[in-house]
Image 1 (tube, rainbow, N blue to C red):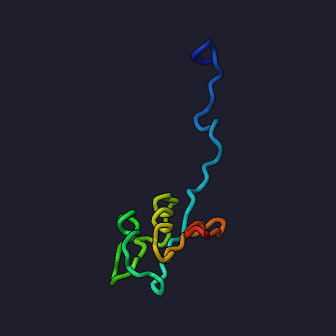
Image 2: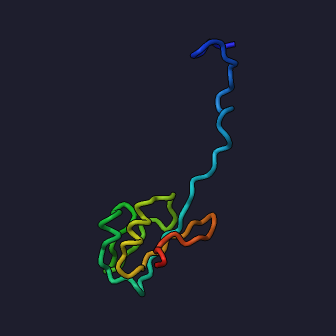
Image 3: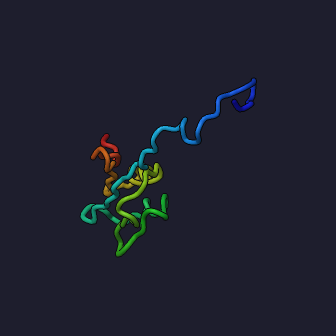
Length: 98
């Protein structure tokens, strides 16, 4: 037995208290060039995720790990031209449907 806070404790193998690691949540990010007016809000909010190319928003990576800032950018788009989808569930996360 190992000594711990409060007295003897049974030794536990490393990782025994942690369940199986789940894969990070991945999202698909797409912008609709037919709707986008190139306002640049997305690129201003998250320049690491969006750029303006030929006057239109373009996601830098079409598949990302979950990033709340991307949801903010998508929901701030004045034309709702950015769609964020959870790849594990197929649920559309943004834009919000009001």
